[in-house]
Length: 97
Image 1 (tube, helix red, strand yellow):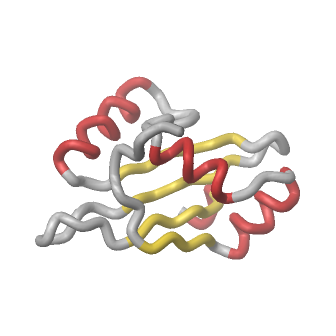
Image 2 (image 1 turned 30 degrees about the vertical axis):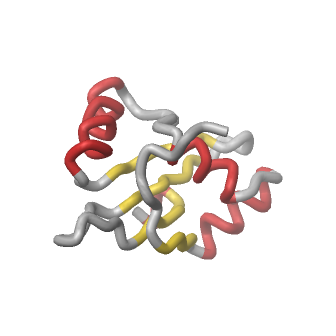
């Protein structure tokens, strides 16, 4: 298993994301593991670079994953607070972003 690059904080998912995952036969854990490992999914090179920087500077991290059904889900980890902790990570559909 790959060492996580950052903390997720509290993990939540919208009902729409859970529905999309069920339709695709995937678990949230699979996408969260990719996100934690620094696999930013279907982002362009510039957004991937910004995420790599965000791991180091504590800013917001956004991944995008296209499911086998063709639907795209986003995984968003909020920026660090004043204590250097990330409060939450949310899985959501594109239209819920």
